[in-house]
Image 1 (cartoon, rainbow, N blue to C red):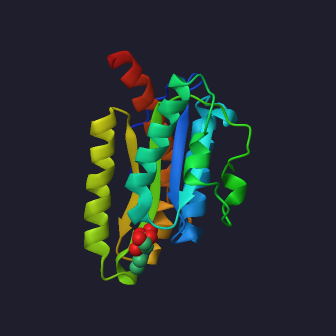
Image 2: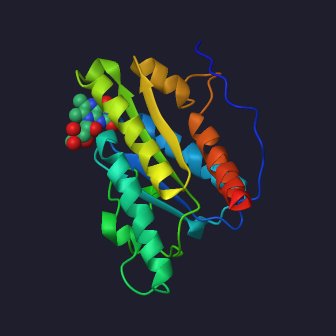
Length: 198
Ligand code: DLZ
């Protein structure tokens, strides 16, 4: 049995927050529980459903540009008083098998700048010769977006050697823990602290 430890949890009030989630569609059987765990924890922290925007991209490689565009779009909306293109429109609606967990551009989501963004992807070494390149570049890209924009970007990208390791981190193996829950908690904590540190 594979066990992984999460951080000591801190619970913060997410009721005033707006959170964006962007997930890759590669390895969707792992992505789905991770996304569900992330959303469940956000809701448990008090984030309103209407303040959670979910969008998808083909693979993890596309996560940094998507996070950057989604955040920029949300800033444009807030400076134009909500008139104009929605953040969802700029990325296109999410029309995957994960659709039940994702918003579409037409959903009744709020507008305004995001307080935190969560990038979710699953890279399994056995499946790609490019594993190291993608993992390294995506990690650096997501950190760059976070530092350039000043908005917390939660690193929800699993970089694992086997499908079994991925399943263990998605809570799919008995006794294992769903890391998506940690990412939801981290997003709320960092969004609240970012406001405190402003
Ligand atoms: C091409 C590719 C491969 C081989 N493996 C994965 C993977 O394990 N996880 C993932 O999220 N994406 C993978 N991709 C897709 C790339 O991330 C990207 O979507 C394509 O190369 C198109 O730019």
